[in-house]
Length: 251
Figure (cartoon, helix red, strand yellow):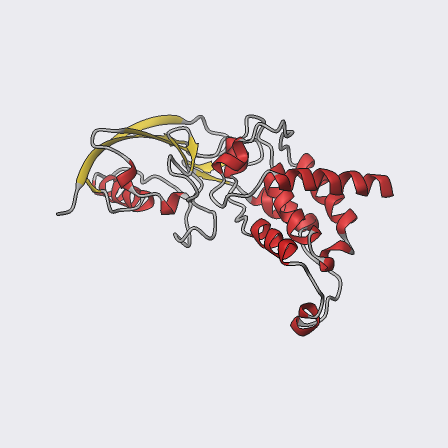
């Protein structure tokens, strides 16, 4: 038999980036514990529309934990109380009947609120565009496969590349630092020979763009890695620091 719960939602409502926001409270009954958090928000919006009220704006796309767009701060945790999942992978079985659930957007100067729970995450795109790519001719797949790479390096590079750029690291950090994201994007190339050609320029450019966009400094408290849905390691930050220092020494 399907289990259902009744919940109270305290949701941040804000009409625009320059508008003053506020929490609004909603009651939602008979929510299936098998439904995802985003499906629950769909039910809430259906209820609000039927009542002639404005639905809650939130971001989503794939709903498969790949795109990183479902960026919600739930009960004090980016993506909610479950570990190693995005909001779209969070299920209502993690909550109890009668719970009060507080839902907010990411809180960061680098991610201004667009409306309600949707934030502008284009800052990450700008950091990526600053250097998170390989522009030299690396040949075709056959040529790339002919370059010997140790399994350890390949595995580490792949682990770093699993970062989906959701911004949970920034939301979790008391300083609003983007170091975990930037370090993951630098590491996925720094560990491979194809990425070494532009390594110095990449580290300089991405760190400079991160600073320009107003993200805070890293103080190594580790909250970013603890809340990351893809378990990106803090060792990437150490690697970014080494890459950046080496780039400065070359200058």
